[in-house]
Length: 441
Image (cartoon, rainbow, N blue to C red; front, side):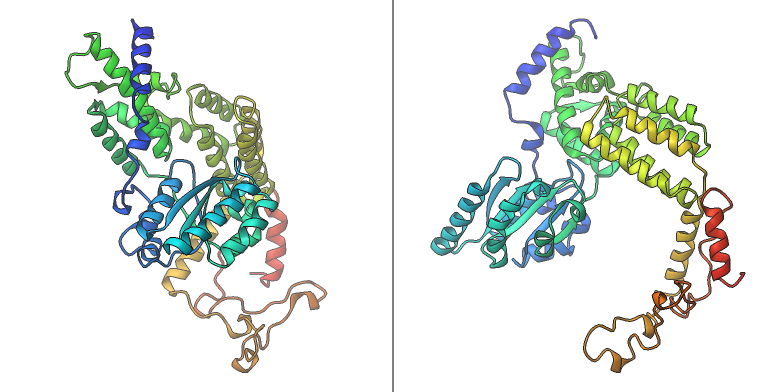
């Protein structure tokens, strides 16, 4: 801690308590103010078109923390002139849901104004809550907008999913986070060193709220330091040390650039089948305050990219470690990450799935998609057979071997081999099986 650190901290705390949180003060007022999510709310983007035409239906907003789910829900209500009514799936009970629906019916009858019912953490809505809510959604009494960080296909019940459109929000990019930090500095009437901004952006890992929360504390520390005469500039200037102290020292030891170097070293060590080196870099990154979710995501990617079908269980192990992190949290979940590192490092390696997907994409682009062969087309509706759909299709389960050779791709892509198993791990058996099915090719 720097000299006078306690004084700085006390002054910073006083400053923070006297004003609304920076993230709340910088909440976008219009869709044009939203940073990121241009695929949804940019000019001509689908979600924006729907809401500006007042044709927004019930929706599920799925994305990582700090990507603007709540903010976007509020803006959708403002743009569509509907009343925004928030509910928490955790704190609200059946009584709260029923009251919200009754109020929505009264508002519609008396004012002719619709309601956007925003349910935060919608994946935690229980069956009783849903049973009360669903009739109101079905008759259009309310437009349900649910927000979740969890995969809704696993976590949100089918009745809700079937009545809502899924909109995927993406973590903010480095450039987008720099814009957010720039707005925060302007609002705080402060400046920042380049390495401090880089550390803020890197530590936030795509989370705008996290970046602004850290920035607010860092600015308060810079203001307190300047007030003691230690700062020369009249405008408070945030340093890397301020950012580090704002995160309780949980910054990468060698600065923001080393964040990428260390994760690269971790991935290359595991890819190189060195569990000890993998554990070293894991321990070093966790000790430096690296976001454990970032590490978990990289391990999940590595499981498919570098282990692949040589050991299909690798993806299961990596995914289990990521879920354990969310369920247990640090420091205990560090053991789950360590287990994944050791497993992935010791597993046989193959990048053949990565290569195969690349080859398939090349065909898709060069052949401009191609038409679905007639015998593979949907034949479950009346008249499909008259169009030739499904005619000639051979059902694999009718054959003793359980598979039949027939055309499964458009003519333009037929016969091209994408996936060629290696001789490593489980792919040895796959290689022989595919060789037989491909006629010895």
